[in-house]
Image 1 (cartoon, rainbow, N blue to C red):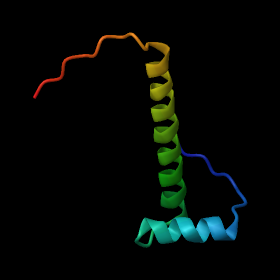
Image 2 (image 1 turned 45 degrees about the horizontal axis):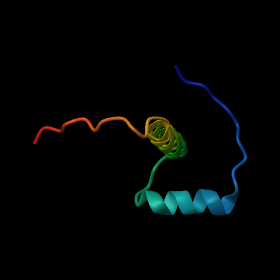
Image 3 (image 1 turned 90 degrees about the horizontal axis):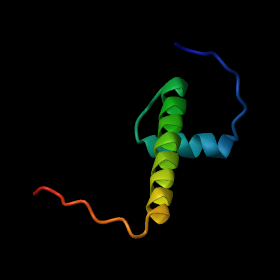
Length: 64
């Protein structure tokens, strides 16, 4: 499902994001990439907080 919204974005922020992409992208791809990155960041922060909630949790053995 797609939604169509109008947003106002600071020109400097927009230009920096486009530069950091390293290639030409559509506005849609730029915003989708930014949203996906934001979601991954917040998920990682939540996961890190869970580690603090279980400080005595035994480490899980890892396969090599």
